[in-house]
Amino acid sequence: MTNSRGFKAAFLCFGIFLRNDAFTQAANDIFLPRESRNYSESYSNIVAQAVKSGECYPAQLDQLGNWGGVAHGFQLSIRASTNVFIAGHPIQVAVILRNTTTNALPINDFSGRENIFFMEDGTGRVFHELFNPGGGGGINYLPAKQQIRHEYDLSSRFWLEPGMFKIRAQQTVFELPITNRANCVCDLRSAALSITIITNK
Image 1 (cartoon, rainbow, N blue to C red):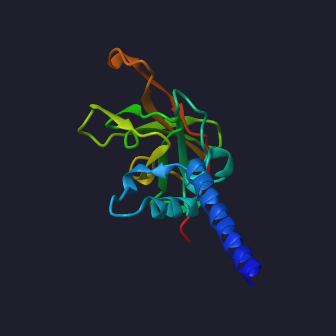
Image 2 (cartoon, helix red, strand yellow):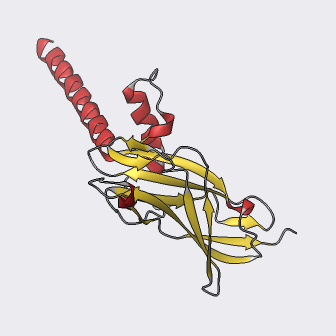
């Protein structure tokens, strides 16, 4: 009986160890959403919610993210809940700015909100529009392994006829070390999100 109880206790402890190890691994692999931080929530709940979201995983595991390459520690994604939109209706997309490093990185107050969207049509013609929220402009910081998500309705600037398009987002990020505001570089881009505009029947 004693051996049986001892075995059960050891098995339980091993199970707890595995769960804790899995939790630690999950916390290390994901990127927490900065704008949804709620300090009344436990850290474990925040991690658990992020684990359920595909967009919080590394770029290679987020197949719908259209993540661009890493530049100065940042990475940019553009995504949509659908790839088919009706002409004349909203074109909702989300852009995520991610800090891929283990250190806080300086960002402009516009970062995550101010984007240039490049639209390429089926003929290869590219046109772009700046979405500027206005205000701000100072230097802030994005904590290590966190990301900022903002949504946009592209139909407010782009009047698209039925057809196929590729959309990329671009943001301004700082190149370290920051000596003056001229250190800003505009080379952080997402990969392309392919969409189709159809007629409204």
